[in-house]
Amino acid sequence: MSSDDMLGRVFAGVDKMTAGASRMLARHTSRRSFIGKAGAFMAGLGAFPMLPVYREAHAASVVDEMGDPNSCEYWRYCAFSGSICGCCGGTATTCPPGSEVASVAWVGTCHNPADGRDYLISYNDCCGKSSCGRCRCSRSEGEKPVYFPSKANTILWCFGAQSHAYHCTLGLVIGRADSTTLG
Image 1 (tube, rainbow, N blue to C red):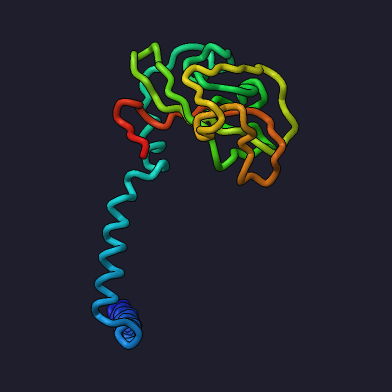
Image 2 (tube, rainbow, N blue to C red; image 1 turned 180 degrees about the vertical axis):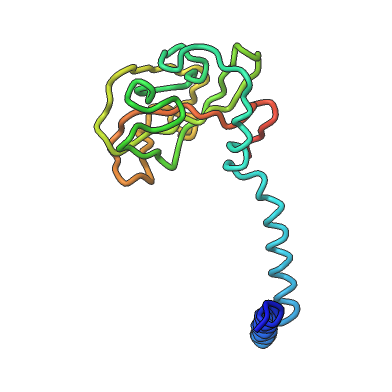
């Protein structure tokens, strides 16, 4: 059997499966229902670029870094509270081995003196090990009272992690404050 015959059989099989799936969809769905669901899906795709993951992927373009990431005076730590992960076996952006990043965080807006711009910073706790205790910092520039929890740095943020044991805190750049809007 030649490769053209094999390819023809594969395409015939795919064609048969597609036709069967289309017939089954037609039997169980009305045209209006299908068009409504397809429209809702297309409208939902328009919101995809606004997800925090999208902004964070583009935040890596922070050009200039200035200062020591293991110092409380580091520019990213303007609303920081906790132990710096760089002093605990990790970095400013990665948790130390044996700990995991919490799925919730608080945010702050910090001024980068290297480029003169303001950036949104996500402060994520690393959880799963006992507290590191080294390089403890407590800065609260722009901190909001606890009744606005997404901007308060005095709450344990190890929700959504396997363990609620706090170890250290990361300072992740989300994006430029002047080009990012929060809903």
